[in-house]
Image (cartoon, rainbow, N blue to C red; front, side, top):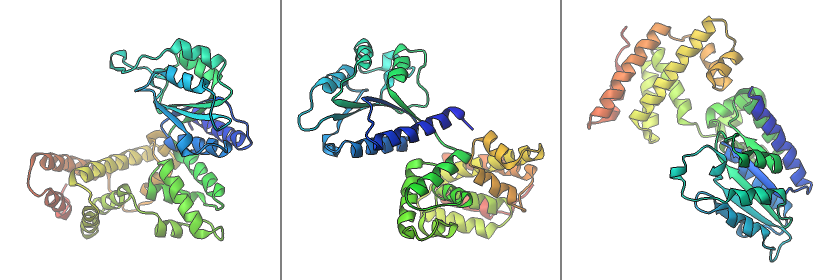
Length: 348
């Protein structure tokens, strides 16, 4: 488990509770790659500031606007509300960057002084949507010390399952860990997408029942990755008719042969890695953590009794490389090239 993120997640929950209780700080720093945490925090701030609506939120893009304009706006008394809500996005001065590519020069000395005594009539949210900030910078250190920080890194594995169960509970429902795994397989790992799907299913069940695998299968659209998993498994196991049928479904849904080839190759590589680690005695959770994938994907592969040998998978991977070359070098019907690949009997 990534402890630094788990700490950030717990902080987010605690901070949201404080906001809901009316304890609102003057400066927030939201950083990381999961934009759902940004949206959730801003939504909670809007609810806690009764005079604020979407039209009255003041927004700045710090890749286009100097930070001193944010400070000047924050220090200007609000007109109709007790406190302003100011969103300052793309705080790139907090990360390592090539100064020659920066469009705007920020007065960071002014920001440092302001952070020591921020305006009491404004709530300023700095958003740094980056995986890492430059911890060596003085402004980064000061921002972490003086702002309320929520770190929103990418959730995986058990942490993601726990988050899904918490989100279901917040929507008045419940979901088992197995059903949560299925939901991730169906909808992907984006918290924004998962939150939307959980809300939809909680409304459908109306608090009368849990979110079950049947509910998920009936209501959640499949991702291309899930169909590609089934396609790869069918072909690698020698079920040619199933592979061709799934392939045609993907084409009807607008998927391109080149992209599908890349996804299938990625799936084959994952199968090889899972098999290799399993031979070394790794358990399901250890394999998922080592490879950085959701445990449900590993579970499906380990439970497949018809799983091909590593030699077979390596040959398929090599054949896919040839298909990829043909797809990128021909102007003919690319769909037919990949279809013939699935239809031809596998030869070692």
